[in-house]
Image (cartoon, rainbow, N blue to C red; front, side, top):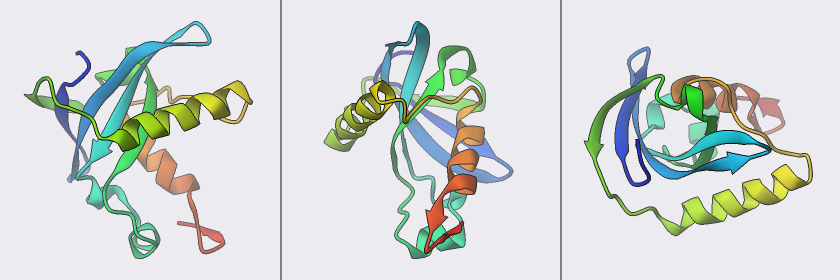
Length: 125
């Protein structure tokens, strides 16, 4: 696994794609940060109604969990959109402030957790 590799992933019939955006360390923990796309099936109806397009700009996963739940490598050397870098910088700022962390689970499980805790229109989605 290296930066620019794009993988398919699935969970319970829901599918998506993820590109490795960064492999690095935070708080002495090795992380893999993903850019997720084509993952509309993971969003709740409330999230979709609020505009979820299947893209999550930055999902940090502890490295030992990073390969779990990933399927085939679809391509290598893929460029990342600027939104990944913006998301990563926002995450770093929040991490330093004690308001962010990373996931210790597979990417599909992390996405499910994101949606289970997302607030849309004043209620969890």
